[in-house]
Length: 280
Image 1 (cartoon, helix red, strand yellow):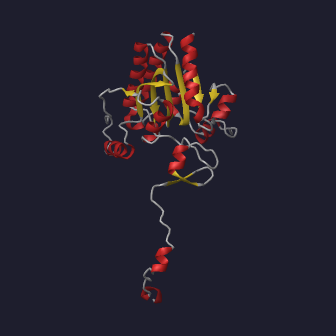
Image 2 (cartoon, rainbow, N blue to C red):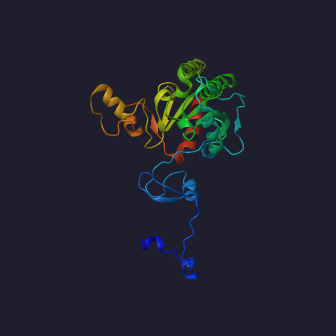
Image 3 (cartoon, rainbow, N blue to C red):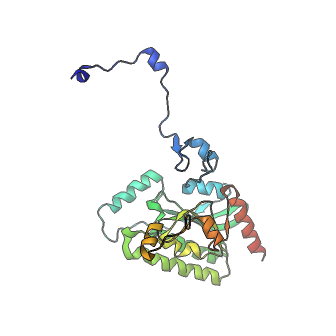
């Protein structure tokens, strides 16, 4: 065919001059408004779309940067590792790949830091690591953090983001719901403050356990929060659900959460709540 015989035209100096050099990995697309945003601009805007205001999910390290006073964070060194209780062929490989990609050892980071000078235990979950699913290590780190808060008589803050329990670890992952809830009960008996911050998305076993039983439940704007997805619920109950019924705004209106806080105000809000509780 004629097309097969056509030679590719070599670029001329004129063509080269007008080529646009776009750096790979420097841009990101907003799912809400479809705007292409420079990553550095997004970072400087607290991972919020500069065009429409949609909230992007945050890496653990970035979240800690925005909340914890510089140089005050001390991560708990628990020396525990993710296991493969069901002996799934690809699970260990997937964990290894995620660690290389995200720079995280697991879906939660736990430690002690200061928020505007107020010392607190803080746990931050990350959706980039198996959608923040709660397996054995996640449950153990959160439980340890709660017990450490009791020991040191400190408040605890947990930033939640999750798809639920980690099914790759079977029934043992579901046991983390009871373990974390029991630890929160002990924290409550000790009269210590627990603040939960629900970010997008917070679902499944995490919502059904430690995420929703805090003294104060905060949420970021537009965060999706629930146990199961809308389609699953509609199929189960055989009824249509109202639009946006799992958004933070809907849940605030119906008393499930206490306040929606914009990302720029979170640090000051948390430090004020800690001070108020400490004074009382």
